[in-house]
Length: 181
Image (cartoon, rainbow, N blue to C red; front, side, top):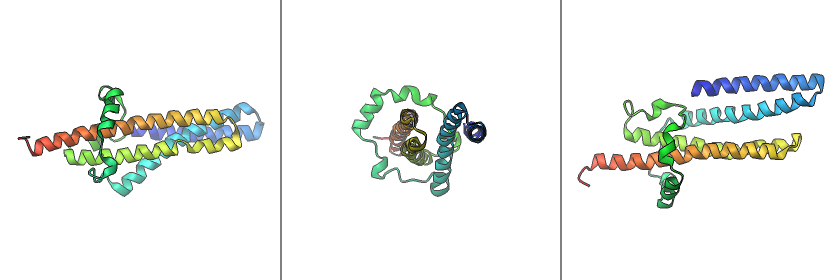
């Protein structure tokens, strides 16, 4: 997954530059449209990589999952059941599968990794709406709004998945530490 994201980021950045130069040189609106489309795509991939690298560098998959922000409430669990998170979570891509590998990590480490991953995706949700500002210069606000909303929804799925998984991990960890309960 990581390799694919990097390749898509580089390719869409290069395409953006190429089509922007073609637009500047020829003035054809089609080139501008393609430059905007590839530029928006590049933005969504590049900032996700940068946000992930930032959290990796600063947190190193260490988090206090007992903090209030990371606690999962009963209402949330009902939402996750309604959304059937249990049925689709394993079909979602993982950027760094090693961070969640039970053969190399403890349940405590995996729970911490879910916290960091959650923060990455929550940050991505917020940053997904930044391209809307570009509509000031390029118009077509609805294109920017739709791509931003879809991008934010995609990241929300990962937030739900991490919170759902962490809740289950912590319950399992508690049972393993105190098997009589």
